[in-house]
Image (tube, helix red, strand yellow):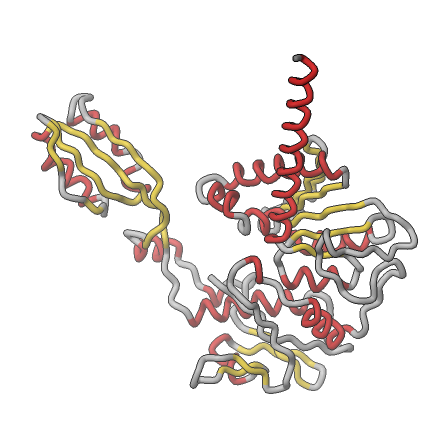
Length: 386
């Protein structure tokens, strides 16, 4: 799914911390109520090799599993059937194959991905979920009139909303001329607004940005080659990394996460250890445990870096925002994320921001420098030995 923040507006008296976050949750729920939701489940590609005399039994079984079968092939006295089927139905099928082939059949499974659930009506009926009875996740929105809030049901929200849709071309426009933030592309490289746009939105909402004296007055986008420090006091470097944001932004990690999110997380930590070893800065990687019930905030040391798992009901960007504020006087903080809202928040604390794409380039340059240094040392040792 793709979400776009079209506009926002705050009131000095009636807007409080968390209002925009709550509005976002309600807006997503309202959108899901309007959309058609499709229940998905994991599927496996399968290769089934059995005696040809059992092919009728096998095809019947796979059909009952809601599987999809390709044209069978014959290899001597054996037949090979390929296709795909729901993981829930074919996962234990090897036991049945061993039984009716007397141990001569083989079944190999390979993860295919997610597809429409084969028995969605049954699952949905069994769950018996009623969105309107889910008090913790409301579908309606809260609007303000004369300083008082009132709830509007999800199917009436568009009659009250400040942003309207142009039915001719589908473009969004704001009737109160609030600036609209648009990305130049759907890729992570351009997934954040420009510095000027962020600063304009921030100042219109919260007033002029107050920065520390050692921070440049002009908002800076991270660039090691062009960065010009104006610090009167040289502060140690601290890098805050939005863990899952980076995992799902980098192709290598995203590919691992498709089958093993723990593996992707561990791979990121190993990359950060190499990065810290070369840069010598303080690295803190933050992972979101927002939906983990009764989870307490944990901070641990992983080799030479720090790893944080947030507490229940606290997202990674919330933790990073408060930590950036705490570290502002002790470190020159850089935050690696492509979350535009998070970038907006950290600007007020005087931190530098680095998109996931820029951070990937930075890490690649560090790895290249490490490799060159190793090769140089190796050549020197060979020369000494000779």
